[in-house]
Image (tube, rainbow, N blue to C red; front, side, top):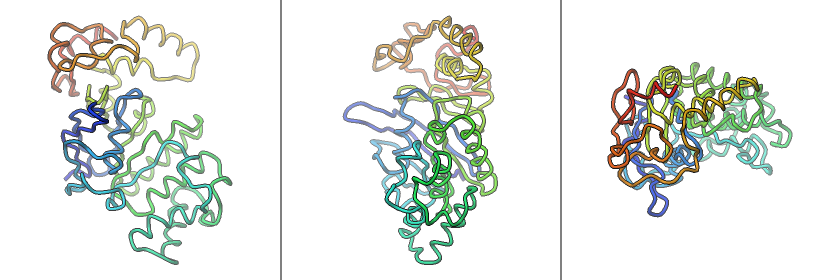
Length: 314
């Protein structure tokens, strides 16, 4: 049984579909990366899973149970770590008060709740007596550890990680990623890791789903998708992944421009075709009139009519 199963998920803002028929599974102990540019729908999927935005269609099954219409407080096996460690913690509450709150909703109170809060802090590398301190007394990396402790204090099975390291400096990113990997392996946790940086996803995830304008462009083992992408959009994301060496970054930028792939501000595609058409150098009339289905190409599933020719772009 999957830890999390999403089928044909549709989320609308007004009449526009921000998420359009997305499906994926996450196995127990597995990390699935959800990758795409701003506006791709990845954070909207996270909100739908958490009950923060109701889906227009589709189902979400958590440990086999349909939770599509349940609020986050009724999904104790599903928790979240948000992007910004500064805004996600209430500055007026102690760390202990913040960690005890989700336990209180589950009926755990008093000394038992405080004990679990201390244990959760220690599990993320912070002292148990941090329960008496305020967020302002911690660095950004430490605050994100607190946010991870808050997510884990209820012993969930699945955790949504919504850009959990993008607000941190590179050295702190590495520490938090290593912590998450250790916690996953020790506890058998399943992660949905939402990010825009394929390099970060490659470190933590076993599989990846690549999103563009609410649709799945490619999905498969993370090594296959990142090393030999089968969709032009994945090629563009791979070329755009940041690297620490300026000369290499400049070379990758030049290579990306040479691909002939348009920018993210390109015009909207037609309603019936591939959403990537306005930016794609391989686009044909077929792409403009028929939405490509996900099909097996190599080790991945790819929504591209011309996936066999994508290697010519690399």
